[in-house]
Image (cartoon, rainbow, N blue to C red; front, top):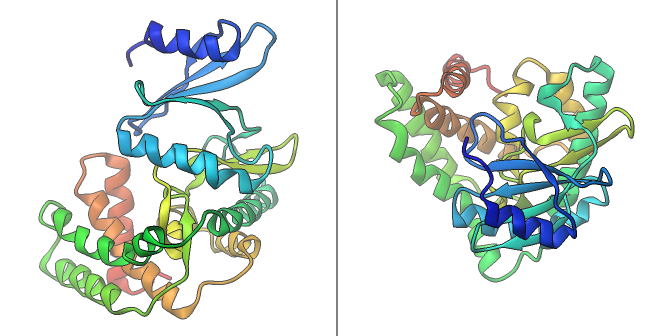
Length: 287
């Protein structure tokens, strides 16, 4: 990991009014570079450098117009942004990633329930009209169309390819589903839980966009919820409703597409996730 460029650090210091101490806080398997900034008075902020302009634009939009709907302390606040450096200066959110904590089953359920409450708020945020509504309405078809880009690299058997093609076809035939402003990467690594404050928070909005609401449930459905139906139930309780039958069909189809995308990469973690999802789909036990 390269160090923080002096020009970017100087911009952050000028914005904060003091020169901070910078500590690399980047996470594995992500392209973004993140530094924890600590001011002389102990105040903490985060400086995030987006890997691509689109991700910078998406996160900036989310933090300005949608994430504030989650409430104070439940998402970062955008202190400043710098398009030249694709830099975002963010406030710290209480808590740590669920991926980094060992919690009691009761606290895990509580964190997922709070996470569901916050995701419902996010889904209702943003003005869903005009081009944004059109973008959201086209999201499922775009996901189905994109599956073909990875299918030849996923190393599937003939029956598996047939299954995935059938799922993408079914996805294209579903009726219109509820639309939302989605987080885009709603998984445990981006869901924080503060034991002190007993509250949750979401971070990393660089994949956020207007889409179908059900698309935000794919990451959890293909990871944590696989072995923990109790956490799925807690999350949806917080979200305020169960998925409709059509959304459940869409979730199954999207899981197949997610599996192909994972298997097309050479990351062992993604490969294991994709293989497990595909095996469950082949066995007919994905729900």
